[in-house]
Length: 433
Ligand SMILES: Cc1cc2nc3c(=O)[nH]c(=O)nc-3n(C[C@H](O)[C@H](O)[C@H](O)COP(=O)(O)OP(=O)(O)OC[C@H]3O[C@@H](n4cnc5c(N)ncnc54)[C@H](O)[C@@H]3O)c2cc1C
Image 1 (spheres, rainbow, N blue to C red):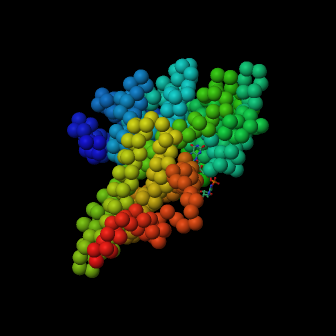
Image 2 (image 1 turned 180 degrees about the vertical axis):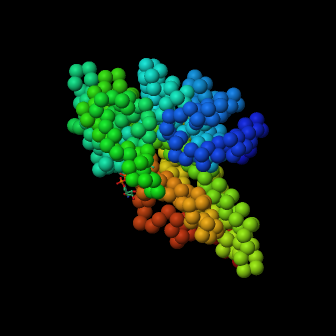
Image 3 (image 1 turned 90 degrees about the vertical axis):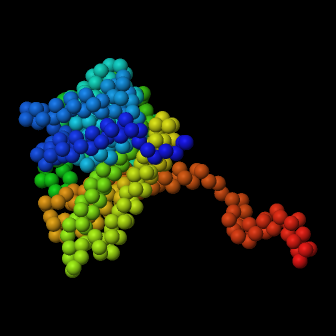
């Protein structure tokens, strides 16, 4: 039977172990070391984190989506989805399991397009969990439309010289290297004239002008860098993939990244729903439990319905990626998951917050972070509006216009056709009357 919604018992046992491990061993780290996931480990954190990573490796759950040749299990995207929905509950969990964004996407494109030398230098340490990487694409004046990018690389002998500005380059301050998308040929269309370079962060001329934080973080602190590439010289072999291939590479990277965010978002939204239900059963007002009030029941039912639909769609999309091994073919569904994701997280987190009353909006509960996280999901890896355009365009390709004045489903036209089709019988019936 092709449609089967069960997880095989062996993998389910692994997931059950992960669930307990994340709750008991990793979630406490979110409180002890918030926002330090992408900082090199100091001695204290290494003493805690390294044994946890060892345990994950021992259980054969490290970077499971990668093939064995890259140190993973080759489990693919569907199994990763089932794993990520557990890991999504915690900020630290993806790091401990070797599948954190943006490094997974970056590793994926180096594995796909990198030379053996590039793989050895950049990919292996990344896969070993010993360094971080940064994807540097958005510019201060242009994000959603990459054809407007102006950061330029010019060939000079055996080297390329990069000049320009990049904005919101996540984790640049702690990354060992940057993957930078630049214009290499301004005379052709952006789709052929842009290339990707692998640039070690300590290359002279890579200047982090300032780090930008997300709402709630103090000014001047944060993980998203404004970078000035100021006469940055890199050798010819710093080019990732061929010259002019940046768009193709970006699609590979962002396709994977987007669906991975969606997988983790299931975990966050489930956590919000769990909190909502616990509160509904624990708090009474005006003579009955919150869970007995119809408004609150509506919040719970709407949240469950949204989450279940989203989860099934994400799992289905992950299955498609495994099945077709072609991000382009699955692009419409990845974009659809990306569109739905912020709303699902926002709506469920907002209802959960509301049900918690004043405590919900306080800094003693995590709802504000979840709601802001939903807003981030509507922007990172491309704004929702742009993905809606993608979905609509792709969907419209599956249809064709009618030549007729009246739509295909025009009832008088269809009735006339139906009568014509069965004219013989209809006449007979009339004759019998
Ligand atoms: C937390 C976070 C981390 C990020 N990390 C990285 C990173 O590591 N590397 C990196 O390169 N970038 C990163 N980004 C940047 C992200 O990719 C961009 O924010 C995104 O592509 C949108 O670009 P923009 O912010 O310049 O918005 P703009 O392009 O200015 O768009 C602004 C708004 O205009 C509207 N809009 C845009 N285009 C259309 C359209 N075609 N139709 C209708 N409406 C439209 C939308 O409402 C959109 O939100 C990150 C962003 C966030 C929030």
